Length: 444
Length: 88
Image (tube, rainbow over all chains, first blue to last red; front, side, top):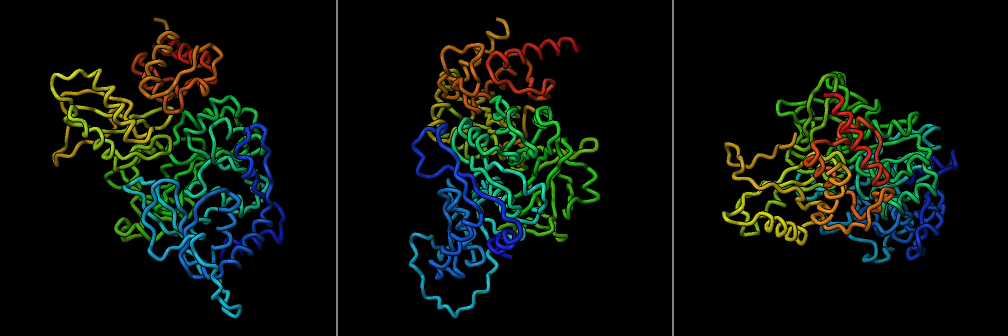
């Protein structure tokens, strides 16, 4: 299976589907005055065929793709899936190291060494996506197209949806939305950049009926007061834990819509959706499995999953003999539900952005007045978690002055969502028997 | 201080801590997303108010509505405080 092949086959039967994007040349204009341009999937497929023909030399090679705009990005995916051996989708921030033989398109030659008599059998391209660094530093995880599109099914209802893209398309969640729209022939409205007002404007202009977003972004949409005017029939929540509050609030506005929250593991290469409008997932799945996925919870509350197709690379050592992968997500069994608690590593999820406590602690310890620091996630009903810190300060220091000094220092060294805005000064910090700082969530 | 005054006070504190420039003046009909607090600042505000007032109406979502304006935000806290007292 190739992406272009699947799309071509699809388009030969049902001629629907298009990207609705802001024309690149209108970037300097006021967002309100800019209309959306429709680019049909058939056009993208044609451009992809031309692009591939121009870069025949890339056959079997390793290529990195940098996102500039949605049309070019999708065209490149269509052109080089099935042609290059490996595709690396570059993230916007820190990128893990690329293989030495990896080329990017502007740097390569025209590549005409391939003669017309060369075989044109498609290759099984491996797609590499950067993790957002949940467990440690960002790393590449390889996927097959089959694995990435495993949960996508075609139906007439799905093909009539108009998807709003609010995630970055080079991340796992965003790519899922792009592939979902392409392979069901649904329209896709690009609202992946801009502030909340601009995104809402695009979503309304495009008359979207389906959105997949983080619970934090859904809360902002609700606060805008503009969500009510949209005719959403499919709402998906992902990227962080969906609590009962946000599920109830969305159900109040969209009483007839399908509301699902997604659990996705980039490492496992798949996820699953829960659509009963309740937080967590049914406990009975631990016995019965769900949608070709098996689940188990170990004595340390780690959730292990065994998907139908497992992303094979980058996870060696985390798969047990039965083929289950340790997701390193913690769950609590409560009544008939399994509820998500967060990451076993203590990594903090601030509205879908991962923060490593150790990194923040190092920055805090730069200051001579800070003797010891413990950084942890404080549960937030608005952003899932906030970064909080306990500080042991040197004696005879004015904590009010120190607090300002700490915040100023952290603002200069860290990204905004990484700054420990909640600071508590304590006499001592508890450590476990091994001398490690406890990372439990103290406000739970 | 009444609930509204406590919320105003907390907003100024949070704006300073989280490096946000608050809109002046904050009125009843000020749209929260345009008040100068971004989503992180707003999350901080709710955390600060949990400390000051001992309640977070958005945790259990006893009132499953998200506020659009400052006035709506204050009313949710007032309503929730009343509900909590009635329940005691």
